[in-house]
Amino acid sequence: MKRFCKKEILIFAVVFLLQVLFIFVRSTPLITDELNPLAFGFKMRGEDWRNYLTADGYYYKYGQLLFQLPVILLIREPVTLFRSLLIINSLVVSVIPVCAYRILKKYLKCSNEFCNIGISFLTGILPAATLDSKLIWSEPFLLTLSWIILLLLVKSLEKGERKYTGYCNSIMLAILQSYAYMVHNRGIIILIATVCCALFIHLILKEKNLKFIPYIFITFIFLCIDAKISESLQSILYLSRDGLIGERSSFISRSFFRTLFSIKGLQTIVQEIMGWLFASFSSTFGLAALGLTTSCFLILDVRKWKEQEKQEILISLFALLCFCGSLALGTVFFFDGLYSSGYEIARRGDKLIYVRYLDAANIILSFLGLYFLFIRKKYNRWKYLYFSVAIYIVVYGFYLSVISERINNSVTWPHITMLIN
Image (cartoon, rainbow, N blue to C red):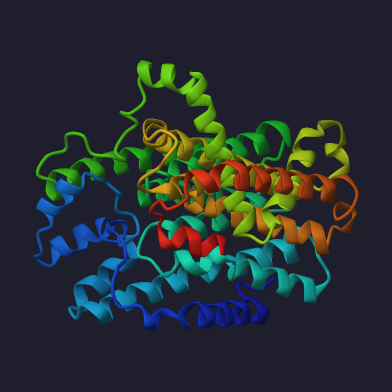
């Protein structure tokens, strides 16, 4: 296959035009999460945000500035700058359907071009990609990095690769997973999922294209570099580094676990998980439910692995690891605020339906849902569809009977409710 075929270029162009179409009705950031990652760029052009950043208390890392910094330094007019940054986001997320098409065409060996193009196009305009790219935060980069990493993982299963190609892919994989962690601390989930999949390829599937020693070595080097950069940026951007939220898991302690495993704590965690599942399934038209349940069947039925395509198993594993990791991290991070608020939530009720942390995994699960529905048609009937529909009914019933009442009349971020609507 050529570097980029005409169909991939066409998919990229169409999705980019659709993504960029609504940018010009936006003129200002909506939330503080959009400002914090830009702080160092504005520091370089002479604007000091230390008082604001210290008062806000959140640290969101810096990786996306690799693409945004030239625009920040060149454009001074605020609205033009903001829209230019959103155009960068649109360019970034438009890579997602190209990766989806290549995985379908080259690695899953799908010969139906109508399905390949249709599924790739739909993957690129899902609500998560479309709405996340209209805000200047880390999500567009995390969404796209997970897809490029997935493409490299699947590529490592390809037979007949040259030896130097395996080394190049392994080094690139290490750099990209480390860069995901540089973009945001939540990128640790992508990093862990990638390492687990690399171990799976190396130890379980016995594939040798992924060169494990350089892969681990480069990862270690880049994580050390990240630690030094983060320490320097915090010293430059904040009046004090004490108590920064997002820098470390300082909220986890012995008392935290006692609270977590209490009756009320477990009830809170169950509500969070069910609420996030509802938001995930709703914001993907149910595709994430199909992708999630079918992937679970594929992974858990170890006896039938020999009958399955290795690529399907690997994609399902990566999606499940990203989904479960993000769900665990997010629910634990928001747990204390929901636990202490009692039953009535006065503010930030969206924490019970906070789908944002799951967006990267949900897009991959939705891709799998479309793939299982239209291409691998043996998965679009019987237990696979029944379980998908059943889990959605259970989650939706729980949302109506418990969660909707609890978050009624509370403040929610427009982004979350837009995704669900």
